[in-house]
Length: 77
Image 1 (cartoon, one colour):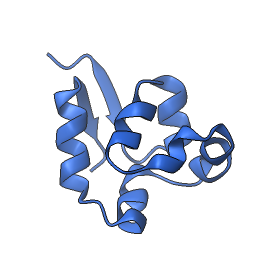
Image 2 (cartoon, rainbow, N blue to C red; image 1 turned 120 degrees about the horizontal axis):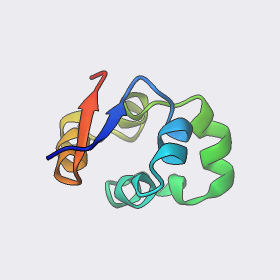
Image 3 (cartoon, rainbow, N blue to C red; image 1 turned 90 degrees about the horizontal axis):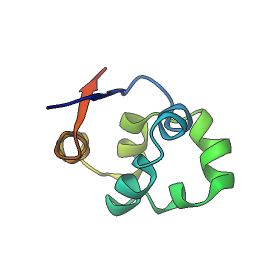
C-alpha cells in the first residue's frame, strides 16, 4: 500500500525536506548532486524531478517506477 504521496510538480527541495529518504533513492538513480546539502538547498529549490530527469537524461518513467517501488504514490506526472 502506498502511504506517502509525492507531487512531482513540487521542487526537489520541498520533496526531500518532507521525505528525506528520497535523497538516497534519487542519488541511486544518478542524481549524485542531491547528496550535497548546498546543491539541494540552492538548485533543489528551483528544480523538479521531471526537470532533473531532462537535464540528467534519466527516463522519468524509471524514476516514477522506483519511487512506487519504495512505497510512494506519485502524482503530478
